[in-house]
Image (cartoon, rainbow, N blue to C red):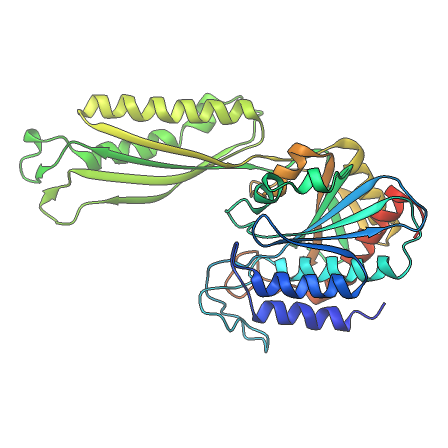
Amino acid sequence: MDYRKWIEVRHQLHQHPETGFKEQQTAALVAGFLTGMGLEVEQNIGKTGVVGLLRGKRGEGRMIGLRADMDALPMKDEGQSAWASCHEGAAHACGHDGHTAMLLAAAEQLSQNPDFAGSVCFIFQPAEEGLAGAKAMIDDGLFSRYPCDAVYAIHNWPELPLGELRTRPGPIMAAADRFDITLSGGGGHAAQPHLSADTLLATSELVVALNTLVSRKLNPHESALLTVTQIHGGSSHNMIPGEASITGTVRTFTPEARDILQQQLELKTRHICAAYGLQADIRYNRYYPATCNTAREAELALNAAQQAGLVSEVAEHPALTSEDFSFMLLEKPGAYVWLGAGPGHPLHHPCFDFNDDAIPYGVRWLCEVVRQELGEI
């Protein structure tokens, strides 16, 4: 297969990134290619999602879903390539342009000789970056219209060498939660702390206390993370503010750990506020569940990588980053894999640019998954 066309498409997508639920041009480009390949195409699933359906020549059988995310990040592109973003405040700094190009290339290759039983559902998903585009597609009837028997997704992984693929049964990416806590009811003159409740001191104590929850409230064998990422409060050197706030994230792999950390965060916050005579407003948002592969599909994904000529290994540990493909894996069996794309900048770096040399490996793997699920192609 000549990949030069798809590399050019990838560059075009990189140059014209669109953030979550704004992928109109990207979706139109995808739909145009799929239509040209002779696929049955449906647009506007989950706002800007696109699905292409390829039916095998051997008649009815299983339906396999292959998913790529299309959205860019809301950040500045500081790359120096000729195809750097021309849209201010949007950049393909996570490689979704490469994922889209790989899935289009796989669709082209499979459509040229669909010698299999069943069908392949090519799912081009919007809004993966924090806006739950996968859930939007599911809520809009994705799996009622396209009842996939299994779903697969691929993500480039700069930490892995080119030509390697890793995945694992069970959790591979973490659940992601956000907390926002505001402490209020204090304030006064900095030189008269005995006359007011000290919101900043209480907030400082809370930051330290929250950082003990993982090590002291979870089983030591449980992997999890809690990180405070923002602290706000005060506007003068001689005034204790009446309000202060913190924001952060919690990452877990099991529902039990998720429940414990939320409960303990709320309990610790209220105890500290009570000790200082303050009130607490706690907002806790569980926005992405853990991404958990099913055993059969994880094994098939690894076997497909080996057959496709990649170095195939079981991932030793899951990652604490999150992924909204998790919503699809709550509905269907499937596997999420990491495709080596290194060396290069890490994901979400302002200079990140997808490694075009990874495209052939990803396409071969996608096509091999179809072969193993549906028969020879």
